Image (cartoon, rainbow, N blue to C red; front, side, top):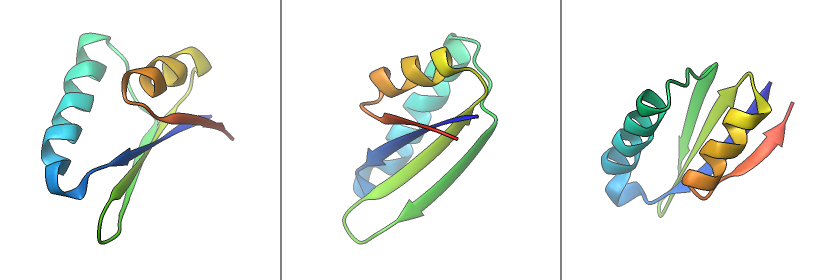
Length: 69
């Protein structure tokens, strides 16, 4: 399993989440899981992928970083 951690602006969270979903659907990628945490000034999304290549593409698209299991 490969995880991508992406920092998000809490004030624009819905826009970021929508953009991620649109990109995943357009690329026909299904995630293996999702988690989210929020602090006062930022949010962090962690998305799980089965394939390293999909995780890498997602990380590049959303300025995240891949964390392997």
